[in-house]
Length: 333
Ligand code: ZN
Image (tube, rainbow, N blue to C red; front, side):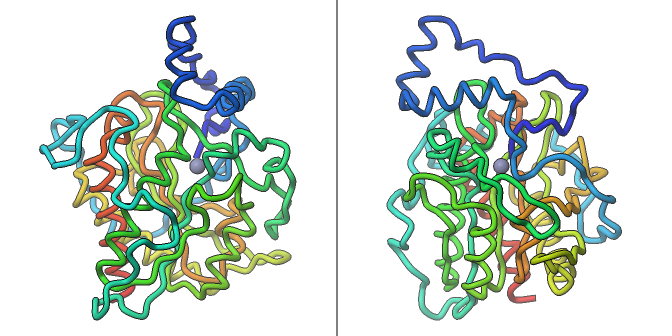
């Protein structure tokens, strides 16, 4: 999600070393000027309370299927030499760089034929340019919260919004090959947002069999690994998660297990008691969902080792595969 004050004792992310005059030009070339301005504003604010943020509720009660995997001895930035190029940042175009509306579509006769998965790429690359709009408060049942947030970014300027879109497109391609109908909440094809309440509504109206919201975290250096966020039991205002708590946990546990298996990564070392599972009641995208839904934080964009993975196209492909396997197992379970 983003640097969000989850660790108030930790000072905000250090200003990027690329602030020097020459490096600033590099950054400026990489980001549209307005986006850069937005990003700097965001940095100055040390990250608005991103969707995922503060309090973490009770650790998962049961984590039977969360494997107690240990981190492999080495986590090279480019494990194996998959065909994808390995440029450390802004690498390779996603398999379906085109737009959201399915360049491909579901393969007929696959095991997931007739099933609908909504993929929610966290944030939006355009949010940096629309801070006023995304700061509008929306009702998430338990309280009101910002419509959307910018998300985090690496020190080198690789934004969470770019990352989530890339992984989501890869995930879509894999699921469609298995016959699923995949719908996005956004595909970089709108100016900003959608707001978190609309993100939830898209899954609900699609009557999705499963929804996954894709993110990367913006925590302190040294905090490593991925985690899946499950909806807490909430019944307040428009929020009633009673019917989705159970199936969402099943979905989340399957994703954790498959993510570990495919990527070789260990669950987060900084929360969730290393189970890879965290339960939260403060996320509008979960509170307002009426269909099974989880969030995944694929890694920490502000940790040097994690960002080396997140920046790798071949690692992102593995991450998408791990998510797809978890979703597929849940749908066929
Ligand atoms: Zn995020």
